[in-house]
Each structure stands twice: as structure tokens, then as C-alpha cells.
Amino acid sequence: MTIDHRQLTRLTDRRTWLNRTTVGVAVAVGWFIIVLLIGAEGNLTAPASRMLAIFGAAVVLWITEAIPLSATSILVILAEILLISDEALVGLPSNFEAPTYQSIFATLANPVLILFLGGFVLAETAAKYRLDRNLAGVLLRPFGDSPRAIMAGLMMITAVLSMFVSNTATTAAMMAVVIPVAAGLGPDDRLRVGLILAVPVAANIGGLGTPVGSPPNAIALGRLQDQGIEVDFVTWMALAVPVALVVLAFAWFLLTRRFPASADTIDVRLGGDFDRGRPALILYVVFALTVIGWVSEPLHGVPSSIVGFGAVVVLLATQVFGVDDLRRLNWHILWLVGGGIALGNGVSSTGLDQWLVELFDWGSLSAGLLLAALAVVAIGLSTIISNSATANLLIPIGISLALSDAVDLDPLLVGLLIALACSLAMALPVSTPPNAVAYASGEIETKDMAVIGLLVGALGIVLIVFVMPPIWEGLGLL
View 1 (cartoon, rainbow, N blue to C red):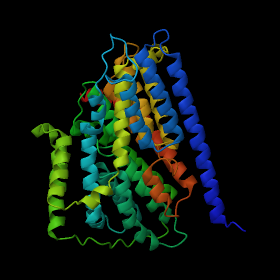
View 2 (cartoon, one colour):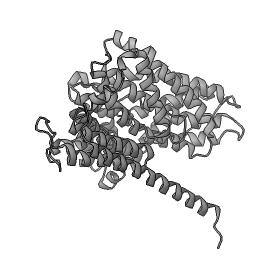
View 3 (cartoon, rainbow, N blue to C red):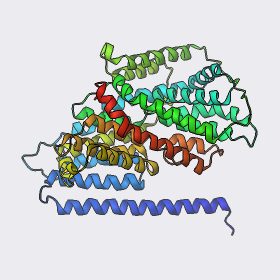
View 4 (cartoon, helix red, strand yellow):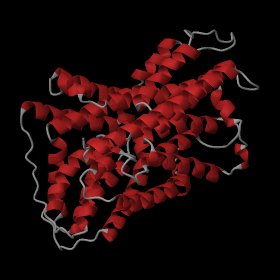
């Protein structure tokens, strides 16, 4: 019996997956059991030691992806209920105010998750009625037929869309726009690669700009909210959009230099035939009103999560978005973010954050060096594992460190910095879903993605660590 190449590849992939699963689960379970058996030691209280067992196991499972990321998140929630809640299987010290099991379950309905749900529903509905693709086709027309102008227009439109629609959905829609354009170019025209690579780069950068643009943003907002630090939609945009604009301009410069066009003009006569049916018209109105409601939150005072949830209700009630559409939503992302919020709450409520902070002499590091270290670790981890998983791991520790007496840092700055650094990781196909979507086109080589991703990420880190903090402080945003 012979085994063809595809069968061999599948067998190899299965063996690799089994090895990763076996090792990851074994290390996570081993850590969990050992830490629980050791229990309270020194300054580590019994609740904090249990939370350390949960935290360490989650770190291993998220990094190795031995089980699905969302499975790790809900495992965190269950473990916290069984070990540190008022319904814990083993009694807790009388001086520890255990969180109720209801409050831990409630992280799955956190306002930040509701805001993200609104964004997901709008994105799925926009794709269903081709609003995103048609809008992109119309908006590209004013940029003419110059290759450099078309590249700029493509990146601007992609970035803006990804601020309000998930960057993965935006990439999928924009790839449908750009592939016909790229196909019209000569086979040796380097601009083919540049145009396709511009889409995920711009989508990743645009995701920095709003709370619904990327999961790390939501994780940071949820953790800050739990510490009593409220950041509305417009404030986040005021902090992040300038960064996104500078990084986007730099990315455009790199792409146009590295992938110059052979032709002097490009034909971009694309579609723009908007659906004029009743459901589509309802979507257009709801989409516009929701975005307006989000960006005008300081004026009307209605939280952005309520605005987003209102859009969900209207689209479902009018059957513009149906039950079958609900099944296609990225529910696993909501669970992933919810688990991250639960992890942050557990670390804080048990005092584990203080114990971790006291392990090192953070005061010996300057604020700039500490921020740089957090940003580099965040972008480094996010390059090889999910940026959501990285944010789940680093944001609770970073914000707890900022709130401690060990350093003089603004918790909002730390949360923002880690979230943005996570989203700036785009050097590999596995770094972000937009990268994977573009890589699947077969037009991009990993080395091209790595060069652009590393340079864009490096500039972004310099901006958010050294350039922007004084500006944000001067404008009263921090």
C-alpha cells in the first residue's frame, strides 16, 4: 500500500498536533497539581496559590494551544468557581472575601463582550449584504489609477473598515476587492504582492483604532473597567488613531518602495452595486447610526456596549440578521475574551497580582525601560501565539504592576500599550488571522511578510513607548 504526499502531510500534522497536545496538557496538569499541593508559602496566601495554579496552567495551554484557546478560557472560569469562589470545593480562609460564583459566570456577559458582540453582528451582516465590498469599491474610485494612490486608498479604506468591523472580516472582504485588481497586473509585477500584503497590514493597523477593532483592545478595556478606570469609545480613538495613522503611512511607504509597480496605471473599475432591498436598507441605517452612536458617546452618555447591543436587537427583530447568521458568529472569540477578563479578576481578587509584582525589584527600572520591556514581550509573544492569548496573560499583570507602589506608571497607559503592542505583531502568517487569510492567496512569501511586519512593528513600539506618552499626557488623555 502506498501513501501519497497529502496523506503523509496529514499524518505528520496529526502527529505534531498529538505531541503538542500531550506535552501541553501534561505540563499544565503537572503545574496545576504541584502548585496546589504546595499551597500557601511565605507571602503567598491559600487563595493566591490556587489562583497561581490556574494562571500557570492557562499560560501553558494558551502558549502551546494544546487545547483550543476558547476552551482554556472557559476552563479558567470553571477552575475559579471550583477553587476561589463562594462555592469552592475546599474551604477558603475566613478573612478572604471570595467572589460569588455568579460574578465569575457574569464575565461571559461583561459589557466589553456585549460591545464586541455588536461589532461581530454588524460585520457579519455587512458581509451578508456585501456592504463592505461594495463600499470599498466605491471609495477606491476617487483615488484614480496611479499605483501609489491606489495603494494608499486601499490601505486607508481597509484600516477604517477594520476599526468598526473585525479585522478578519475586513481582510476577507478587501481580498475580494484586491485580487481582481492584482490579477490584471503582469505576472512579474511586484505590485501584485504589495497590493495583497497591504490588506492584512492595513487591517491589523486599523484594528488599533477602536475598542471593537481587536480583541486585545477589549481585554484591556475590561481589565481597566474592573479597576474603576472607564475609557469611552472616543477616548480610546483619541489615544490610538494617531498611532494607527503614523504606522499606516509608514507601512504604505515601505510597501510602495519594496513592491514598485511596473505599470504606470491600474484599472480599478470595481463593483459598487449596492443592494436596495428592504433588509439591506435597514442594515445601512443601523450601521450608520451605530457608528455615530459609538463615536458620539461623550455627547449622549449612552455606553458603547448598549449602543452595540441595540443594533443586535434591531437587526434580529427585523430579521435582517437571522438565527442561521447567529451560528456563524465568532463565539469562540467572545469566550476567549471572557476567560481573559475572569483571569484578570481572579489574579486581582486573590492578591496574586501583588505577590507577582513583589517578586522583582521593578523600582530599579526606569519607566521608559519598563514600558519598553512590556511592549517587546507583548509583540514577541503575539508574533508566535494568538494576540488575544498574549493580552490575556500580560494585561492583568501589567495593570496590577502599574497600580502597585513599586513603580510610577499610569495603568491606562500600561493597558493601552500592551493591547496596541499585541496588535502590532504581524510578521508571520500565524501572527494574526488577516495574515493567514492573505497568505492563503498564494501570492505572498513568508519573508516578504516578515520584513514588512518586523519594520512596522518596530516603528509602532517606538511610537507607543517613547513618542506618544508625553503627547497623550500633554493633551490630558492620560
